[in-house]
Length: 184
Image: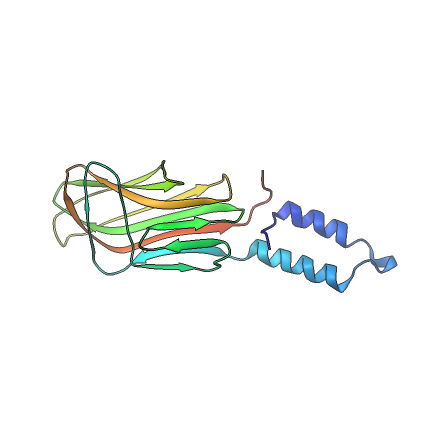
C-alpha cells in the first residue's frame, strides 16, 4: 500500500465520509481510510550500524564506508545492506538522514565523510581530525532530503593522506521516512 500525503488523506476523508444521512459511510471505506492513515504516519526507517571497532583505510579518492549490521523497520519501504553500506528507500515522504561515528586515525590527519544519494556526492559532509590511535573523535551530521521518493544513500570517506588507517566505532547511519503534507 502506497504512503499517502496528509493532503491526499484529507481529500479521501472528504470524499468517503459525507454526512451519513444516506448511509454512504461504509465499514469498508472507514477501514481503508484507517489503514491509509496508519500507513502514512507509521515510522519507516532503515539503518546501518557498527558498534565494535571496524578498521578501514581511506585515501585521496572516495571509498565506501561499510557497516556490520543492517535493519529495516518496514522492508516494503526501506532496504538496508551493511556490506554494501547502503540504505535504499522506495516510498514517498521526506528523508531524514543521520550519520555518526567515533573515528581514530593518525594525529592531525583529516577524514571527511560524505552522504551520497544515488551514487552522487551531496553537500552533506562532516570531517574528523585524528588525535592518534585509540583517541577517537566523534562526528555527526543530520540532513533532510525533500526530493524524489526513491533513492539510495551511502556514506563515503576521503582522507587527506593516501593509505590512512582508521578505526571506526559506534557508527550509525539512519534514513528515516517522514510523512508530509503533500507530494510534488
